[in-house]
Picture 1 (tube, rainbow, N blue to C red):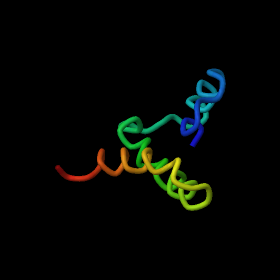
Picture 2: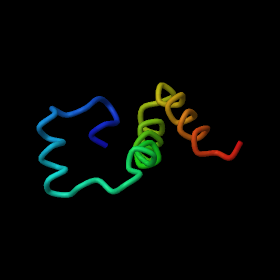
Picture 3: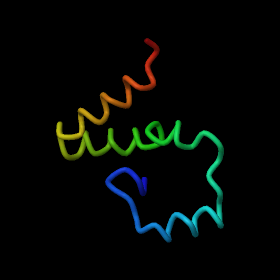
Length: 63
């Protein structure tokens, strides 16, 4: 979720990688991980989050 609404300072990610390296394919799954949080924001704060939800759903939906 640290990449959902921008990013934390670069040193955070370096330290995170040292403590718990990201698994292969993380970049491919990142949006899927964030979908829950976007759906929650859509529910709580309204339709401003709908385009991001739709983008992720299209990305992971079969053609």
